[in-house]
Length: 312
Image (cartoon, rainbow, N blue to C red; front, side):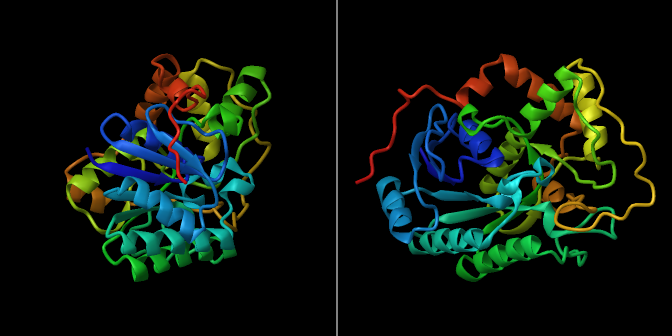
């Protein structure tokens, strides 16, 4: 059985990816936050930018793949400090790229659609509609460093949504549903746009990409361009909750800054490479609701008795 190391199990992508992969692979889930325990995975926590710890973890499991889930693995619609890249993300990226090269291990970097901002409605991998903000520049630097240290890496730009482990507190989806239920949700932004994908669907597409031996830059996102306001309206419909509060007026405003412009991703390259279609928002919400009742959410917050990897 192949072993996969998921770095950043305390992100939306990392937690959901670890849970999905554990059905078919041995998974070491590494987080910077203590208490994150994904069912079926071996879990550790520590400094993600420490080369010695990274080498020790790698030597203990000898994985075939590393998936690095940093700030790019969080939706910028979350609007908190966890989604804003910092210099730490550059250091973390370099650490795991160096270790991947040293251990001859394939590296997948999860990056973000927020490296882009208009004027195009959909951005291809080579798009020149680059966001000039400092956080977007940091994400670009992480991508560039990854290329230099691991030329055969897979770099995936995305905008993933999904549940998060209970120990991290309510995530964006959980908070939104709570506010909808209380009738206090909104108003939401109707100007920024993206192509969200459910994190578990992203995980399944990643496995297909690895099986196909893909390298280079690929956009993996949903098939629908949507704004936060409309997405929350459809979320309310799916969960049969009151609609969000509508904004008074958003006409004539020009969104600028990190993740607040036009970030929608063109996915033709991955669709052609794998011969697949990208999922719709309706697909995402149907699966999201099903995960509430089929036990998937419980797997993101496994009991403390779940086996922990012992690393000296």
